[in-house]
Length: 334
Image (cartoon, helix red, strand yellow):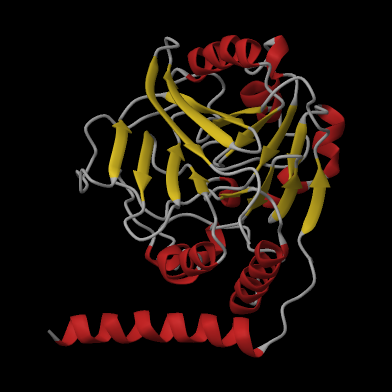
């Protein structure tokens, strides 16, 4: 009982500190870097989403990549979103690490995948030289590569808000086990987290996008191995809900998954099946919220117009495992 009171106290304190910061300090005006993706006049915006992939083609990474190439051509995709853990087990050793070609360039070699890849860092990426993945040198090695900590990608029909979620996780600081994390430019940690939350909240509030999509590595809600991230539930989720975010895309759990919200339109979509998966590692969820769970490898596709979104999950054979769609009015009623 005493333990639970202590846990509840820290949960409440964390929420209080986060919201005090957001409302007492003025929100910064769009400090997250913005990138504009060229518009597509031929149809819906089409993207693929894959995470937890970088294993030099092993653990079926090459099979997932092959099917991504096929589906990417069918959908005429505009770009690819990576939900992090781009290079296992310990990120890159530097900007000249051959793992960049061995796990990325040489694996995702289909013509349809020669589009921009928008990446976030995962916890395994922070175990190596995190700054290497952020370096423009990698874009010189492969022009598709874009990786920043937290940033925004603007399109004609949706805005994508990429969030650096690894520094939010307490365990990487308090109990890192035998791992060493690259916290350069992150410390002092609380200042960094406050700035990320403040800038994200400001950008979301200012956004007029029909569809708001947030991308992070770590789960907020998941029935998989890692389960819910308490830190993100307390600090990030209230901001997403308050700003009417439509989708949260993540990896971290090595599965494919769709969970709906009981108290908002927000949909939680896990695409972490880019290579090694965890068969049978699932904690079954409320069936009213759990729309889909697959404990194998695969990826996700999204097609987006001003009024509709279509989502599909694929396995390594190209089979459609789950489909879902949502719609909005083209003009809001004032």
